[in-house]
Image (cartoon, rainbow, N blue to C red; front, top):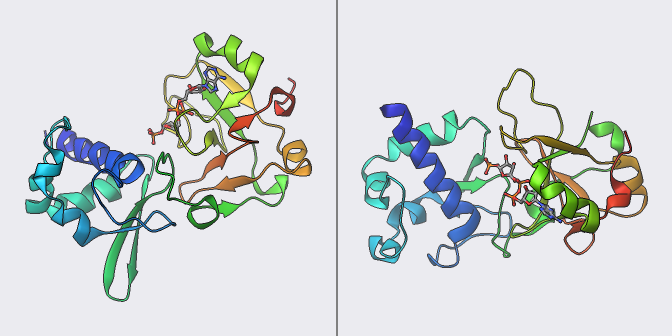
Length: 207
Ligand code: HQG
């Protein structure tokens, strides 16, 4: 139905804005923003070898009203819109693999542990042994992701997937004290590069 289509469009947008700017020659600023007009102008040919789930960029072009529905209705508020000098810009708030994006420009630094109630990473039992051995790694992304709250009654929460079955709490005070840089995104996801892409086990909260 209409909702499925909007969701699919949201997934496509997420993919482009987090992962695909370089390969699509999409001009992305270091704060992650691209011009909506550039997005709508993307040449379909550049998508030829990429399976897009259920939307083509032509559909976005024809239905740019839907583009804004996808942005507004996104259940994790994954996107931000900005108007600058009469031009509309759009970005993904977190989750990037694109290295042109700079943490300091995309995100707001967390300066004190008092700014956030809790900092928790959601993962799966199958990863636990490896995580306890080598720490939390950012994998393909620029940052390790944490939520600043816990999912209540199965509700969707930004920063972790709905089906996680292991929670790892970060000792924010200790991490900040020892120089780990922590950031918060516009949709309230806590992000860190850790130290060289790794959050060592000694920063996990012992509970
Ligand atoms: C795991 C979704 C083995 C890590 C979510 C995770 C989030 C390790 C996976 C956002 C490991 C990486 C990010 C180690 C980490 N050994 N496994 N040493 N270190 N892992 O997708 O945090 O819906 O890059 O626990 O809601 O799962 O896309 O990160 O399971 O906000 O907006 O390696 O993506 O948001 O997976 O998810 P990811 P994530 P969206």
